[in-house]
Image 1 (cartoon, rainbow, N blue to C red):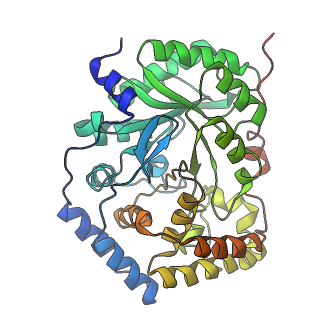
Image 2 (spheres, rainbow, N blue to C red):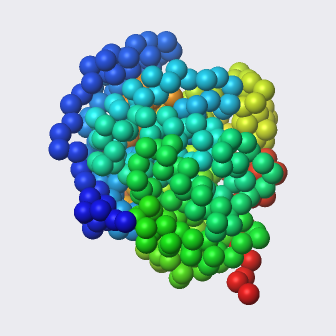
Length: 391
């Protein structure tokens, strides 16, 4: 059943924190983490991280109010997936993010699987009622063991059981924003919406969304049960959603949440011509990072660095600020396992462009053609899928 608290959160979109105070240990760690590196860009990053401005601005995804920048926690159980981060530090990053104004945290049952939801639930427990938690269902994951099995599963009965597991792992009584992670080609989207509607009636889900879906499926889903947000890959490095998805979101009043808004690290300057990717790092299989393609694509980074110098910002902050300038209902969710990077990402909210500057930057990006594919074919096959028609 819904409580007075969840009713209030639905009507207001979010209950904001009553106060925020800087965590000295987090700021110290941020500065220390930036001591390795070189040149003016590193000094600029160090300055930005040492005195992060509180993130006070808010945006609306449909009727859901969130901080203008969110935090993706996908890699907090395993990074790309080659190393296991120190769990207490992941909690520290999550809590420091909240203290600095982030109220939007993005997870999924597939991350880990299951383990990232546990980490997030542990981290946000002291302030759960003052934030928005997003999670996702849809991959074929064993409900008890977390074993990843082939394909997808959005059968209505499975969805309900998957959400019960999410609630336990996240230590909460509701998911603020529940996405279908990928469209199941065997289940009509009307049946998926019906299962989510049942969870909403029980107060276990407050809003819902879709990720990497086909356009007709989005329209059908929204007609069946109003969609709050779409989550697709979108960044300077991959602008595909501009062609059709973002215009449909604007038409229907649906918010847009870019995943990988920093181009899996490329737009921060952390990848160069000499970078090698470990076995198990999926970027090793993305052709946009093949040596020849990467050599060409690094020209975009040079453009970013010029704008970073002009705005006294870091390249990643320019990339995030550009996304936020595109539409007032776009909310990026950069992920990180490093305190300094999280604090730097918050600083993107303070970077603004005049109309002429935005046109100049966008025109330069329009003239650039990224070489290589954003995903391996086997993964790309799950994007843009249309759900079957309901018989």
